Length: 245
Image 1 (cartoon, one colour):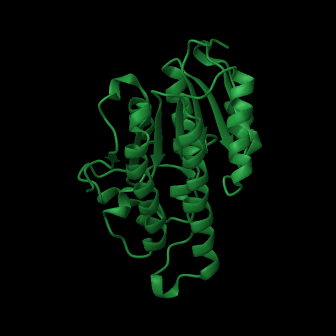
Image 2 (cartoon, rainbow, N blue to C red):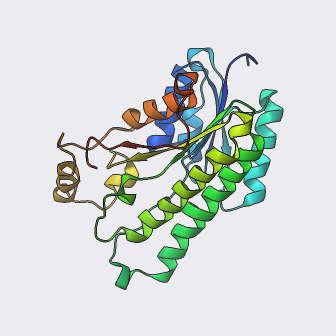
Image 3 (cartoon, rainbow, N blue to C red):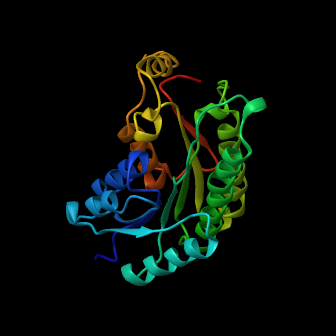
């Protein structure tokens, strides 16, 4: 490990957009710690010393505040320095349904992971990220592009955006930048689950480019926002959606 390299902690980094964020950060010369919840095999495969960097995975349930706090401590001890970049990507979705028919347990699951869990991550990041660092949360462009059936999911991500905007003001004295990236439809396991080809085509048509995004296209924006190249970008919701909204 090289103490002169940046160190990032990616929550939800074993697959999809999170794994792409790990890859983009490694490519930029950043040491990366990432968390996973339920796919240790995928996390194990992601651990490698590519580009001369160090990558390590940790099992964390973001619903557990103590576990979130503990991973920051463990990463600081094992890498020998505090993190200076955090990606709050861990989250879930559930089957779409109109608000009138949305099940209580499905809504509670969304809230527990996407709001309470994200709060745990962002609160710990606000305490632990080094001065001059950066935090990026993943939300969704559906906060601004209403689609039937996904109101509860979008609502949880809107809450995260509110946290991001407040934190950008609260951490400014330490020169810590806080932003969010709000993708449109992206080709991940989470996106494809339970969707017919017709449904995928409808999602693609939401963009004037008539396709869905790729994980690396979102990850490159996240990597940029965490870098010094984005030193004048703070408190923003960057929409990576191919012009959907």
